[in-house]
Image 1 (cartoon, rainbow, N blue to C red):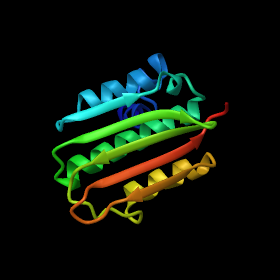
Image 2: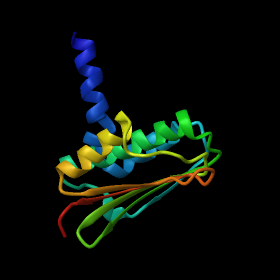
Image 3: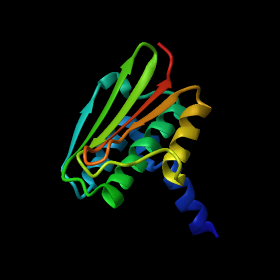
Image 4: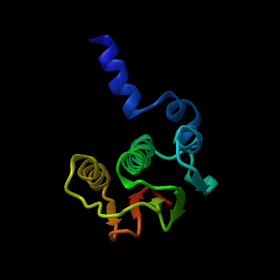
Length: 140
């Protein structure tokens, strides 16, 4: 029971996120992906409110997991940046496309982003890859 609880908490707020912030946690995540992944991070995307950071981390982690499991991608890209009081999270792959909000993973992402007053969009034409963009309010 304790081990299960630890796994759950770690999945929601990994130590790197708590201790070093969103940028470092995202770098650690990208380093573990078995597909070449380009990371572009605006330094202003770091040290945001905890709910914003955990949601952003979840979106990146779930998007990367989906790409690895389903997209048959050969390259991925992750971008984090601040725009007009929003944290923009973008994850792209060059895979098979066809993703849509309806399954548990994408629906869970959309629900988390929506809970913070943000929006999630998925652009995934067949044979043209997938682009997931989440805009989450984070203050000025």
